Image 1: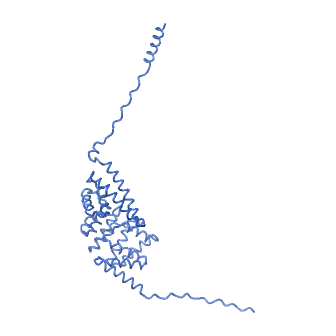
Image 2: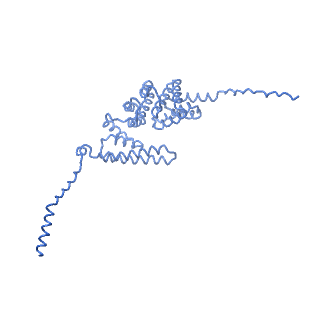
Length: 331
C-alpha cells in the first residue's frame, strides 16, 4: 500500500514537471560602453572639463569680490586667483596644449604678478588656438604686453579681435584703438571703433557704451572737441539718467594700459556731467605723469576749468515785483 502511494505521488510530480514551461534565461549584463577613440584622442577630457568648471566658478567669485567695497575684498579676490592658478597648473600637466586651460592659467598668473609664466602661456595659447582665438583672451594678452611697454607687439595681437562688436571682443578693440591713438595713428584708431559699432545705435549695451566713450575720448585727445561732445551728447540723451553709471560700469571692466589713461577717461566723464571739481582732479592726476602721451591736452582741460571758475558770474536776474493791488476806500 505504501509503495503504491509513493508511486502515485511520484507519477503526479513527474507529470507536473512535464507540463511546466521552461524558465526564461537571464539576460546577459550590458557591456560597459567605452568611447575608445575619445580615450585615445583626449584621455583626460572629462577631468579637464571638471577642472575648468571649478576654475570658471572661482573666477566668477573673484570678479564679484573685486566689485565689493572694503579692504577684505582685495584678499578674497587674490585668494580665488591662487586657487585658479593651482587648479590650472595641474590641468596643464594633463593637457599642455588645451587652449582653454592655457588662457585660464595665463589670466590667473597675470593677476598674481607671475608675468613671465603668463606671457609664456599666452604665446602657447595663440599657437594652439588658431582660428578659435577668444576676444577676451586677446584683450588680456594685449593688456599684458601694453603694461610691459611692448605697444607694437600688443597692437599685432589685438588686431586679431577686429570686427563688429560681439561678446568678449569689445575690450580688445578698446585697447587696440587706444594703443593706435597713442602711437599717433588717430584715424586708424577711430576706424577700429567705427567698424565695431553698429551703423545705427538703437541700444547702448555695455560694449557699445565702452566703445562710444572711447571714440569721444580719442576725438578729444585729437583736439576735435566739438565732435567729442557731440558723441557724448548723443549717448547721454539716449541713456538719460543711467549715462554716468553705465559709463562707469563699462570702464570698470578695463585694465587700463598705461594705467594713467583711466584718469583721462574719468576726467572727460565728469566734465561731460558738469562736475568740474572732480574733472579737474582727474585731469591733474593724468598730467602729473611726466611722459603721459596726452599730457598737454589734460593741462588744456585743467586751464579751461580754472578759467571757467575764475570768470565773473553775471548777477542773478531780479524777478519783477508786482505792486500790491489798490484797495478803494470805503465811503
